[in-house]
Image (cartoon, rainbow, N blue to C red; front, side, top):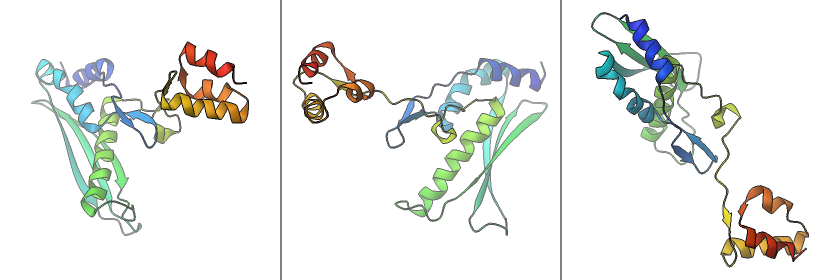
Length: 179
């Protein structure tokens, strides 16, 4: 079996859920580590290895460092590469310099691996189509119910509450009585 055939098997059978959640951006995502973990079953089965390397690109045209991440699949005979290039935001607030490079590195690795394994991330938040966040539950007697009750009293509507929250049947009935 050729390396292209082995890669095609991975590209068609690969499964890696978006098991991580970004509470700030309210979206689910997968990391480079998640992708690498999902490739492990294929390594011995297909006699391949997967590596990711990085280098800083010397570019006089931009005011910030650029990282090139290269994901490589190889067997004893050949290798196939895919790359991703990301900038390092040196002005990112709240991060130390190693975190700035680490963040860019993680992003670059993820997209190099995604390019290699044909992972379609068009539903990711950075593509403008974030997956919906899990809805907060509202039950009678909870703090969230009290806030909903106050909102309904002030606004005389339940529509926004029902759209944004998972409201149990008893709470819906009690809130309807307030309108």
